[in-house]
Length: 183
Image (tube, rainbow, N blue to C red; front, top):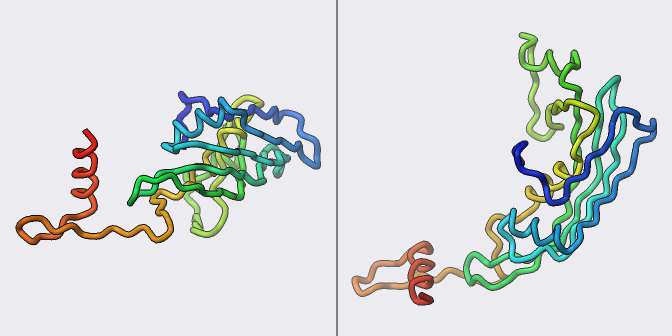
């Protein structure tokens, strides 16, 4: 998740004070500079394409629901060979926001009542202040969740290397040895 000090490369502030009943569509197509910043922020070789299609709609009395998809074509390094790998990300985006002074938002965990958590269910509502929500930063969070943390090229295997004492060398030692040989 992004902290409040860091602005998303694909930041898009949606004004939510007067949303149409059917919602407001938002499309974010990242340009070359934004894609380069996304690649750096997420430790990727490159982001070839990034597109978020969102609907920002009223929810209950004063809340806001953001739903849609984020899709991207990225290039990562294989964790075994360090070769570039192309991957496609397609993530559903869904979040509910409540004004920080909302009664629903205040009740939350302080109500003393029973709270039912469902790991597969929707997330708890987030709170916001003012009349804008950064839906671009939200889409970036879901983009980050879609990145494979251990990308592996098809057929790439870690083969143990036996040192002089016939002990198997682990993957970390292999990577260190490989890095040392490049220096």
